[in-house]
Image (cartoon, rainbow, N blue to C red):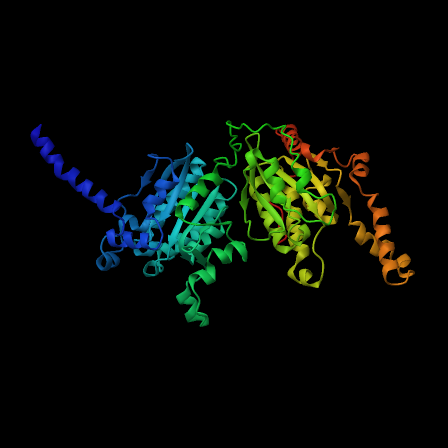
Length: 525
């Protein structure tokens, strides 16, 4: 027996040594440098993301198999990619985490083989996949062969996963080229302030190609992608907040598109709670602005709202909340910005969010106070027609339960794209202040009363006449006209809004929509 144990000891000791070397990542100096930059080492990121003790690693003992690279660099722990399966709130997720302490987290052949294994596993087992991105992109020394081809497969397979399982790309460092397309194809992209960026080319390549001398932050930092380009969803302060945000985001989603969203059981907020604070939040005057965020927080469970792209296209609000523990996606006008008028970016923002919710069976709640689409030569040149059509397309395609509340303005195509009656709203109600019409009374006066106005001398007399005409027309577009024609399902007291939304969700929870067979529609891009 002693001899048998003696035979095994060197083997076990060797295995232990190899594991310790792998866990050491790029070594203590590079790990410490990672910390000095305000970034956590990759394994600490994974520990913060998953439930304690649940991570099962795949390929711990992986190394680069490139003989020339090994000769130059020595051992490359896990080939710079830590991959495996863990649990978040007791539900499994696949994880691909690039380790910046190993050759700047560059994409090596063996590491990309591991990511391919995670993609295959996520698809086969129908579980979400989370990318923790901190990578210099493709490993240039290996791009003449397998790694370059593997990157192409990565993007194609992300498209295959799209709408089947949730995909999250947490931007925890600088990512360019190949690793910048990973978030572009993901569903949710949080970025860490001060340490993360993404761009199709790094600043050195940009300088060589265009002579433009820029920082990573100026070219593709959170300020660019959460406020200007709209590529990213949220800016967070540090790694800890980023990983907590990923956990919170996934709490609204099922593991895959065949399961219902998870309903929270520990809800104490009554579904029939009256929201009388809405009387103070929303003015009855149609042109007076207010913050729709306050309306949302007043009606959802415990005032908790998870925004998506809050700093981009602010004239429409998108995000997740719950009613009675049931996750919903909210699309709401924002009268504080452009009066809630829709433009190119807000149409894109709303359309993408609707597609995301519809893909994973998350019901949609629309809060309307919309004057319609922006008009003029500038937006026509930007393609407002096709962008608006994209939003129409998304709303029309969505087969999840859809509940609509018209607070005040519901004019023209804005009423349609915010899920008006013709767009299969399962329950549509209006406040007494609602105005549902092809356009507002002020616009109507300028068109249908134009000749009468022109007959009145310019100045105060004409202005007073215009106001009187508009008020007369306003009486013809109040919600009781729409209710009388059964074009809306009810007119409600604003304080009943939370309960009305809950009722709408209940009556539509077994909704089934049959569409004509097609391979796919033709998206107006």
